[in-house]
Image (cartoon, rainbow over all chains, first blue to last red; front, side, top):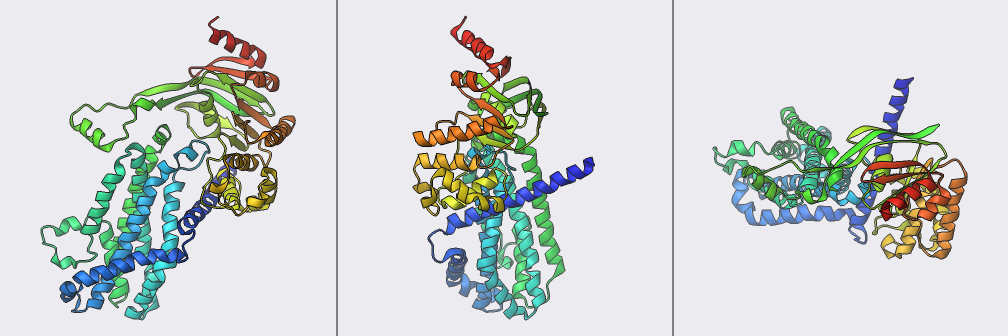
Length: 268
Length: 246
C-alpha cells in the first residue's frame, strides 16, 4: 500500500514536471517570435548567413581538403555551424534561466531544474522546425538512404545531452558567481575555435590535436558529417563516441546541479 | 486532523552581506589563501507548530523575525536545515501576487501559465479561464499582453487565479490591499467565504486588529524563535508589551 502511494506520487510529480515544461516552453517560444513574421525560420537565417560568409572567405583556400569542391566545404561548414549554434544558444539561455526566475522560485515551490531544461527544450523545438528539414534533405541527397536520415537522430540526441549537462552546470554556477557570463563567453569562443567547423581538422598541428579531442562537440560534429555528407552508411563507432560524450557531460552537469541546488535559495 | 506539522524546524541561511557573487574575487581569495566559508545565520530556531484542519492562524512579529520564512518553509519553497515539515493538502500561496506573469504574452496565456505554476493542469485552467476573467473584471482584455495592463489589474488577475479554486491551505502575506475599493471588497468577500468553510488559513500581518478579530490562535515570532503561541488577544498583548519595552 505504501509502495503504491509512493509510486503514485512519483507519477504525479512527473506529470507536473511535464505540464510545467509545456507551459514554460510555449511561453518561451511565444515571447521569442512575437511579431516576427518569419517566426521559427529566423533560427535558420543565422547558420545560413554564417555558412555563406565562411564559404566566401575560406571556401577557395580550403577546398583542396574537401575533394576540391567548394560545395563540400559549404556543407561541412553548415553542419558544424548548426551544432555550435545550438550549443551556444541553448546553453547561454540556460545559464540565465535559474537566476532570471529567482523571484518566482521565492514565491512558488517549483522543481528548479525545470528552468534550464525548458530552455534546452525550446531550442530543440526550434531546431526541429527550422534546421532539421534542411539537414534531412542534404542527407537524402548525399546518401540516398533513409537509414542515414534516421541515424541523424543519434548525434542530435548526443548534442542535446551535452547541452543539457552544460546547461545544468552553468545555470548553477551563475547563481554563485554573477560575473560568470563573461567567462562563459570566452569558453564558448574556445569551443567555437577548437571544433573543426570552418577549417579542416587536417591543418591542425599534431601536437595540438589531442587537446581538440577534449572538446565534447567534436565527436558530435564528426558523426553528423559522416552520416549526412559521406554518403556511406552510418558509422556506429562515431555514433557511440558522440553518445558517450553526451552521457558523460550530462551526468557531470546533473551531479553538480543536484549537489549545489540546496544552496540556491539563499542566493536568489 | 492536523494538516501542518513542524517538528523542531531550524533554518540557517547565508547572510546577505556575505554574498560572494564574483568568480574573479573568489578565485583570487583562494589563491591568496584568504578564502573563508560564507557565514550563516540562524533564521528559524527550533520551531514546533501543529495546525489543525480549518484553523485560522495569525503570525505576528517585528520585521526580520522570520514570519515570511516560516510561510516559505510551509509552502515547500525553503527546506529546513534540520527538523521535519509535514503538510497535507494543496497550498495556495498568496505572496505578492503576479510574480509568475510574463508581460509579453496575453492575459489568457498568462492565466494558464500561472495556474500551472501553482500546480493545476492546463486542461483545468482552460476550463476556468472564463470565470477567472469575470472575477478579475478583465473580459475585455483577454487577448491583451499583460504588460499593457495597469498594476491594479495585474494584482486583480493574480488574486483571481490563485483563489479561483478553494485551496486546502490558504497563505496570506499582507496581500489584502489589492486594486480599487470595489475590488478590495470583492476580495474580502471571497476570503471570508474561505474563512467560513473548512479551509486552513495562515495570515502574516502587521494589522494587529485584523489578526485579533479573525484568527483564534496566533504565533508571536522574535528573532526566529517562537515567543508565544496561543490565543490571539494574548499574543498581540505580549507582542505589544515587548515592543513598548515593558
